[in-house]
Length: 323
Ligand SMILES: Nc1ncnc2c1ncn2[C@@H]1O[C@H](COP(=O)(O)OP(=O)(O)O)[C@@H](O)[C@H]1O
Ligand SMILES: [Mg+2]
Image (cartoon, rainbow, N blue to C red; front, top):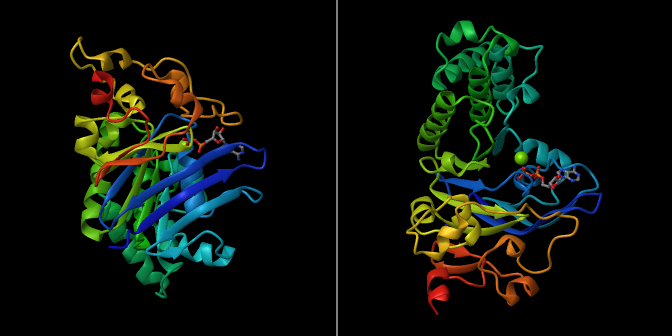
């Protein structure tokens, strides 16, 4: 089946020469949530912006980004604009940056509806209230008349989700949608995204720096490190059997004291400077399992099974450490 989103060999080079993303591959099917996880600065937001064509002019983007088989890289700006808020919608960490402070929540949702469908203002206003109800905003008719500054962060994020879903997108990109929210509201928003995904069949790309967030909300997880995917697997498998030393470190895996992976309970060192990335595996300088080859040659993302890929010269790790 053609995936909703198919990113292959994506590379992003900013005008200052910094290569934020290098040979990135991702796939998301209808009704699926792919979580993209990685430390701050690993290229998650740049990837999202490349997919929706919002990187600043002068940024070089290579590879392929296909939406239901259609190539998006190289589309004319007006075609890309039509896709945004249509087939592809995005929600950000801070809803205030995308909500217009001068318009009520109801007006903004109604505008999102009208931007892609020919319906009257009155009908759009009614539908906007229904959308606000759907994202569980209590007393939606009254809330629809409020301005963003009159709402809490959690409420604003619900309004953003309502706007995104008003377009009935095939793909919803959520870039750290709950990072600014307290834990309880975070859980509510993620549960809401799950429910809407199930109802609408929208594919969700959930970007987060927090592996904890993804355990219950992702079907598949891609772990990014310094502009590349280092491991991907179905969520349950990634948590049960992480293979890449970086994933093991992120999980703070504390197996038996006898296990060599216990050494990675916390990852020492810092993310490499992307202006001068290390030549081989980008994680090698921090990796307790590195061998000479790791410093010389970048490992390719290799399939351990149909659904589990890892970019590590030492994979499978346990077997390789035992040898
Ligand atoms: N416009 C830009 N120009 C130059 N470098 C940038 C720009 N935007 C982001 N970067 C750099 O690209 C890298 C990836 O950034 P980003 O995608 O925002 O990371 P993440 O979302 O994973 O925290 C970082 O090193 C960041 O400093
Ligand atoms: Mg980011």
